[in-house]
Length: 159
Image: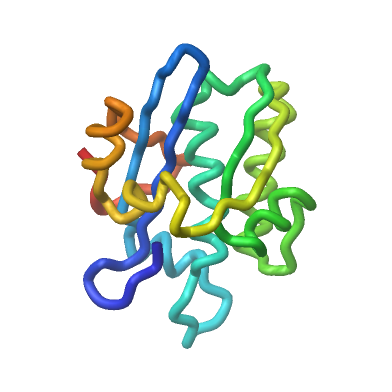
């Protein structure tokens, strides 16, 4: 989510695993991270990076559940989905995130599939807005602390 004002840029993810395990994470990103995603001084939106970055964070957070397995990732942004499929973006900050994802997949022998989900149907939309009430009530989801790449520190984490 990329909101104007104090809400800022936040990310979220949800894991549905075999056996009924449901977990989620959410985090508000620091201005330093947001600035590192910008390619122009006057840029205000970093939605492309904010849509791709949680895919990397999900791999790091749920490493033990995803490594060596097939996984389906639902993304509610078409340009992000296409970048993930191609593992390419002409936007350097996005390409850097994609290269970290590719390296993780290679190292961990993970086999991803990317599909589009409309925003209104995106189950990770609430955690990306720092809310897990619906997931807790509907799926007994457990909120987990997300794992970030070295040097990335969020300003808030969903609890």
